Length: 103
Length: 378
Image (tube, rainbow over all chains, first blue to last red; front, side, top):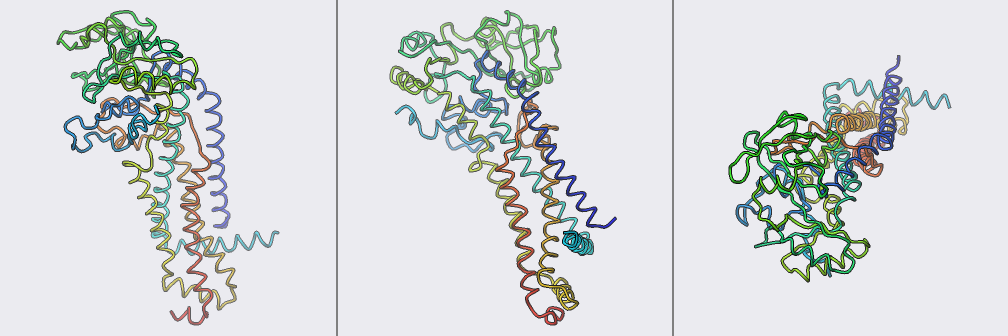
């Protein structure tokens, strides 16, 4: 078999795998995903949750929406970031311009 | 038509043979290229899926959460605030929320403790998230003990375990009754962690929040739109570790393209000269170089995308675990609903495939435009 034929077949298989991923995403989103999301949404409503459970090492990354302005400075105001997960999150938008939404 | 296809296949054959003559270099380049695409695509899939999940399920969050601040810190809020807030026009109902964090020294994990509004759990019983069950190795019916703030053991029976599918919101959750909550944390009566306010008309949320802030200057109203915006900006490109990862990936692509664009090696120039001297047209040489670039970059892109999809949506982004876990003892398993953002994948394609392929063609065009004899002598 020619090298070009092998390469084109490999590329076709890769493209097919990508298309299969798209189909799988659509299938999961409309079948399993819908059920899972409904269950999670129900949990949020019943327990009145406000945050996703992405990190569990710091309270201002466990509940970023609820974090107060001084949460990261828990030791002193010029302390460097203490928890690794803090490197992944930006401050909540509401803390950057306090009470702007209330005007 | 058949001639055109055969022409391309012949040139691809030659391109592949040319690449295989420098097998180690090109395979190494392909591996690194694929790795960069894989990491970046994994990041794109993961972040996009988390954002979509947050937008979908946090739409059920409270309309307004009212916190009380003392010395800039989140403090307990008197229950009396609820009555006065409830009297504001437009407010449907106000419910105190009891929640907090509990560090279990025996297991070294921090849990989120929550009291539901409805009495779905009896005193002496708890509902736990799948992460808590894994951490403590407990199941329904088991008895475990929590240590209260007064140092006394608080025995509780596991009444249920939330399924793993709810890990995204409840992995570290312990749900208990209000009586147990007060016993565990020794909270004073008449106080709550914060207040959940329901507003009948969603367009009046901002107005109600402004009235609350005016009525109680020591409070901080948090709108649902702010909660959603918090997660819309999660893993934002302009902050933190994400900009480092993105910059690294972009720099890698730039280096790949620059390496190609800075010119051909003497051997490659000689090769082009020989091809020209035996009758190849300039367009044929350019097509050859195009396929040389496309073979590597397109293969890396396609393989990287497929591997990234499997990594995030079948293996819960396991390779990111060491970074995401940080100092967490309890780590949620991300069972995310797959989301493929065509725009971002297209951006990744234009960032990875096109610059490299273009950078391959330009120096080849310069070499092919020169005299074949001069190219062979170089």
